[in-house]
Length: 424
Image 1: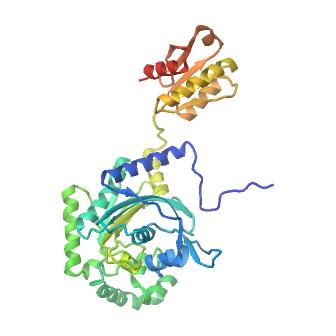
Image 2: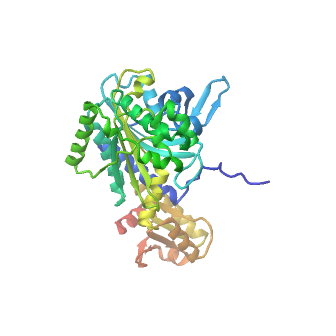
Image 3: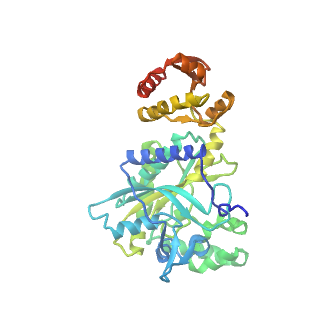
């Protein structure tokens, strides 16, 4: 019988790699908490209409990348391809803004049918922030600070934050007309997707990755040329606040985002650690999304950070740097020693906040040490017939290779406490 593999575009996460995931998620939660954000969790599938109305019919996600199916009731459902629309749906459904503005974060999977490549999977994971109910530029800068704090925590020194503004309903029609005037004479030379989008939504052409579109996008007019006074003032204030909080940035007038719900502020942070420039996080303001989903006008801004891509950049930046050794590896040389060590290990797991490992197999001492190295244990607890007879356990520091003898008390809890004190 042939073994079954994971679906293409998905991956399994297991030790020791899962430790890096746990660390990243813990840092993300801690940073979000420092800024006053609480966690939200939404279903992994939603009504398809949520994403068609929220993300936009002409986006690549809706046109090409969604996992959509009919449930047994004949309803069209879609695996969550992004997080913001589900968060807004939940906020509206449960009237979470009834008591004022709201700060939320999320961590979890999303699903897109796209060609698997480095850092991109059909099931991927994201950490994100949604700052709801704040219209001012201060909120835009706050969410950029959160994402940048996580990047700084990992010492990604070449990270580059880029910001732009894409206007609003007041100034966007003029920009649409400017794009049409620019792209229409080149229509025959554009990619098939861009030709189709030219009349429906020419802004989507700016997000095209097709090489034949690149020269025409490079020479296209920018949003900065057609901003209304209110949008220009908002963007100027963002730049002033970024300067005030000391967050370096670059204005990129070509920067757009791939969703239709964005308005005014957009931003992205990239690194070249993987060899080519790749996004670490991206986001922006989406003041019209609540209305498009049947809610009241509500200002909002947020970002998303892909965990897979971020961890790849961290590894490329740090190399194969291993985390510091932690905890104990109990090594029993024979069944009598194992009977004595198992309760001591159980007591260690009750006492301390570091791991305590034990291999129950009868193996040579060198094999046990290899297991300790693989587990990243700092100390080995060695007990054989000689130690049993002498009434002690050998405590070996696996970094310095120095040994100490710790009395093995009759009560396992007393021995565990002595071991913890000896390694404090």
